[in-house]
Length: 411
Image (cartoon, rainbow, N blue to C red; front, side, top):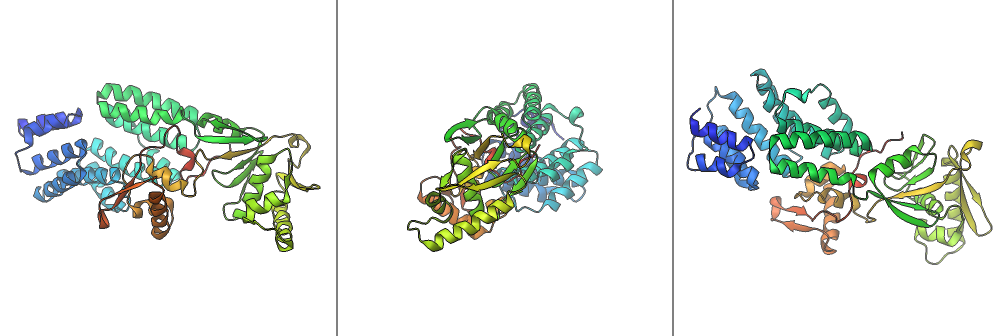
């Protein structure tokens, strides 16, 4: 490797893409093409970077398996930034195996982190933790240690372990300063803001206030009966009752939870659960049926009692729990397409297929949601055809952790 290639590689490692381009911008040999591609990626020209990396991979000879594998890893990182989640994982896994076999532990670890970040984006926290379980970052460069700690913080925040998340972010800040890369330091600061911005709303006794992630964690660990509108479940004393597939029952539970300790009139329940504007006897009969179903479902944690004008929620079936408070935990943003907005709020551009893959929904459903959000001026599209991408500025003043599709803990 000649001196210009070496100098360009050191510049890229230090986060100086312009310094790297000054040395290799006019060269078309395989190493220079690869470095130019990485430099363009750092500058944000992802399309050009992808082209250069593919040219470099083809230009490397058959005996240069490590160099080709590094190009694959760099292209995988571009795909992740571009939110191309459909890229086959086996391609990156093969590159990682090649790098491991040739002793390139740093780039092999980088490949592993890319796959873990992809799993984290898709809400597959268990798989992400398993991939990190046998990784020891102590011998890695500071930039790679920062990436490791950011992933740990992301997993901890999604699992509502705020203390562990704060510790990981503290370690990430230290590693980022040692790396001396401004973009990396900015990424850590951005991740840290999730702990200091409102993450949810608490509705109790007719009053509402914003909660931080640590407040949500404390609430779920308390003795309160929580009607969780973030995950459509009811939680109390370690028990979790899911109503994700029963929207009518959850609408009734939420209405009762918001009004506690007061009761809710029957006409209000009919409007909340069925959207009924003109109530007749058939609506009242259906309400009685659904209330009976809700009473049966909530029996392990609460009772639903009839009153003169409607129904009321009574927490706790055991004496020690009957004095528990009833609260509703709501999303920071109430929107029909809040889950789609949560992904777009990271400021990156997403394709509808990537959003469908991350949400576990059909692409047609996601496209309808995007069209509705675009009509409301909440998202915007870039490109055309297969290159069409969707994005929106970050939602001001909130963190989107509780909008993302991952189960919240019960302890």
